[in-house]
Amino acid sequence: MGVRPRVLVMMATYKGERWVGEQIDSILGQEGVDVTLRICDDQSPDGTFSICKKYANRFPNVVVTRNETNLGVNDNFMQMLYEDDAENYDYYAFSDQDDLWMPNKLSAAVDMIEKMIVGEEPALYYCDLINVEGSSESRELYRFTECERHPATVLLRNYINGCVMVFNHALARIVQSYRPTHFPRMHDVWLHMAGRFCGTVIADTDHAYMKRRITGNNVVGKTTLNPESIGETIKLALLALKPYERVQSETARLFYDGYSDYLKPEGRRVLEEFLHYRDSLDARIRYSGSRSYWIPSPEALLRMRVGVLLGFY
Image (cartoon, rainbow, N blue to C red; front, side, top):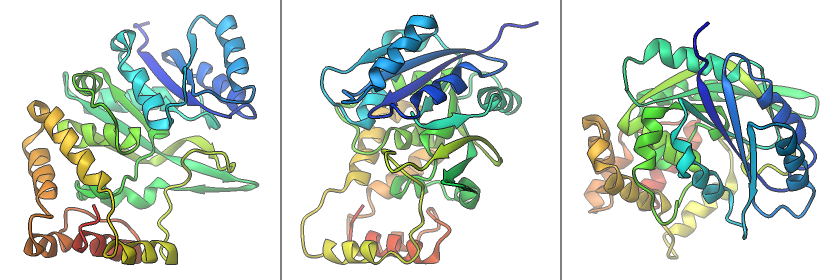
């Protein structure tokens, strides 16, 4: 029997006492891999930290700490990837606090990465997930499979949830080589961009290896398409009337500057095209019709193209 892959699972917790124990159990029950579960609590006012500490007292592969101040989900997740001992693993995964993983979630990801990746190629794997709302269940990410043919989509709108990601040591080392002072967008966007522009993305949307509870306490909920969202339309209309922050452009610039040495030629081209789309009205018009980005809902895609024309991103 060979050596089992070592996987670092990073869980950010905040007010998750109702479900966190069950999720920890599902992570510790992963088959075919050696798991280290790193939990960082973000000043939960309930019993979340106490529950996690009880697991750490029982299991040597569970490490629990608590932030001195509330950092927010972005920085709470990302700080765990930049810690010194985070270099010592074969694979990495993010975990939300109220999900439920199937026993083969990690081993299925590792098997596919090792089957498809040769040598030290940086790789990011993701699968589909099952949303659970009351008694109903629904699949989610299979609708975004076509986005794999449109690499700039992540720059405008992320569609891969951190909880379904597994990435290898080579990709982790690239991410760890640069740390901005802040992350304007979510942690899963940053990792998605690293996989997309510096490595290989493996989309396994035929399979779902986890269930995500939609509880009302999720920090980030479903990847909704909002095809008839009046609120999104009004928000875009107001962009022409007031100043706003272009977090997508800020994120792309930080990423481009920080990882320039690791960008693949196609990734560099996609990033540079996006970073210059606001240079002129002509550039915005051309980029608004670009085939480099796409999402399944025609209405949401139209709003995205209007947002490009307005320089929203």
